[in-house]
Length: 298
Ligand SMILES: [Zn+2]
Image 1 (tube, rainbow, N blue to C red):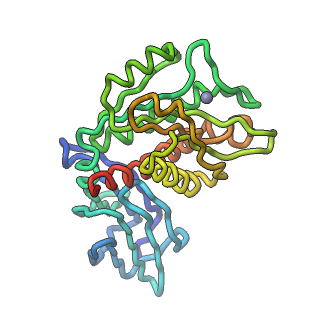
Image 2: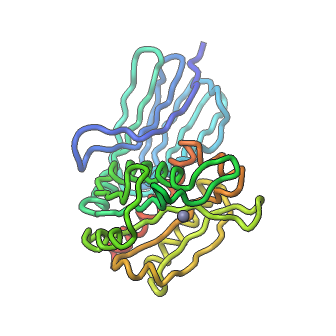
Image 3: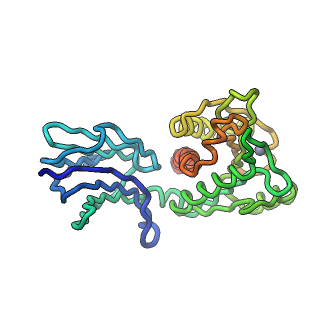
């Protein structure tokens, strides 16, 4: 009996100390140990596994975790090739677990991202809180709860990249607007992200929208990139980029994302799902990579 590949998992693996701490990890599970050869190119890594069955569809698995883009699976005459595409320089190591469940583990070092986010301070401002509930979904989800969950996920992924994160609230509370602005100005952060949800014009209306200060070219690019990433990761409609003079008053690069429409029952359901919250955070983070990278080039 040939070994069978039963599953391919992807996750972030954390160990050690920065700047060699966080890895994008791919785990190939099989019924018996796998023999394989590998080839590394500037933006891809291919494993060739002869004499094996594939017990899953031979297709492309989306990753887009900031480093890895996707995994391409091919199967022909009991030979499987697994090609992993990555967007930035990385150091790859692999190891095998020799007891059931048999695993072939491939670690992609995220040092490029850790260097990029090192010493960056990002403010995440989950909207509303306390007496201010924000919008309410048709099944009863409050905006203040949903945006806080997304904020926690975004903080986690940023901290894994070595960034410092300041949350304007960590629970069900609210800071008076004047005090919040004063605090924001004192933080000397590189970026402010306000998190809100959209109100649809009817029960069927859905999607996400972004608000930026006027005449800020780099923030406009960030908003466009967040739009592309959210559309790709969440498959929601892009309701465009709006401008608000009030954001200029914060005195730091600022953007507000209404990441979904809470008045739409389908999107309200998605907003309760922690995997959806994680994908939302990851989309914003992926756009931030481009933003901070562009800053190192200018
Ligand atoms: Zn709001």
